[in-house]
Image 1 (tube, rainbow, N blue to C red):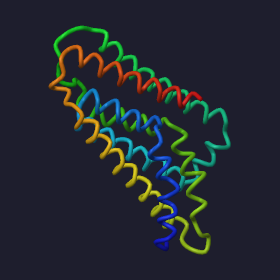
Image 2: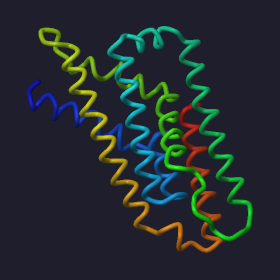
Image 3: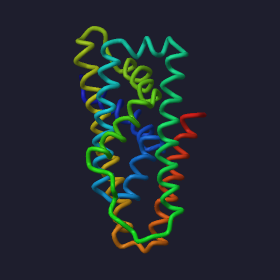
Length: 202
């Protein structure tokens, strides 16, 4: 593929990446509640989830899901329920007074949550299905072009979310929060996840 085509693709998907969506809001909420390490783990999990989307697209399963309203709706509401569950956990914690503690979630747990957040977001798959074909030439290797575009998209997502995590963490460390600050932080983080669930629902 030519560099100009890659630049055009990057210019098309960057606004989508930078627009608050469930995956971005999840990374922000995890960084606020667990620090930069949690944000970076969430970023990694979401990027791996996008690898699953790109693989499904390459295999043609995305087209099947797009053609099946029932299956699409099932994935959509599973994602909504999962984000609402995570939000309820954070909000419940924010309502409890007590000494601020280190995040209880392990690195694997945070990564798994992020992975499920990405995989259970069918709109992420639809981005692949709707946008990638517009930049693929049929006179070349379709699989190779799709792989290159997918890698570029995932790389841009990883870079942006990693920078977002570092920026949010730089504002304040969770370890330095008072109990009141911890409760506010967890409440805001839970609110962000509720917003993410709402965006999926609408």
